[in-house]
Image (cartoon, rainbow, N blue to C red; front, top):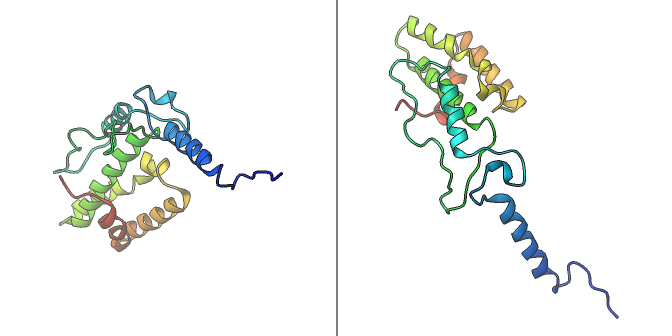
Length: 170
């Protein structure tokens, strides 16, 4: 009599079915509260939007910039599946936008006074949720290096992160 092992062709469909059911239950929402879903803590799109707006109220954008309008987050993915977000998503995203606005303003400033104003704001990056929560330590070090260069008058390193990662003025 031959004993069956897990890699036996008879078990493969069963294992695949279990994996699909497990992933489907863990990766989508059924319309209930975000806290009801298995896995790490999550917040709804409404909670993420509230975080964003609450955090945005604490930060001033440069002249000519405005906070994004409309639905910042959605509760449904393109494929129709429900979506949830990590706690602090709204805070991180709003302060990233704030940093981008001031960084772009610094890089395009026409006068020494405008550059000094924008630089003062850019150097506040370590106070933001984007920096404190959104960046890994290695990334913080990279940003710190770029901020130090900007403070010393060299804006090239700041340009290297601003151009590919920051939206332009709305």
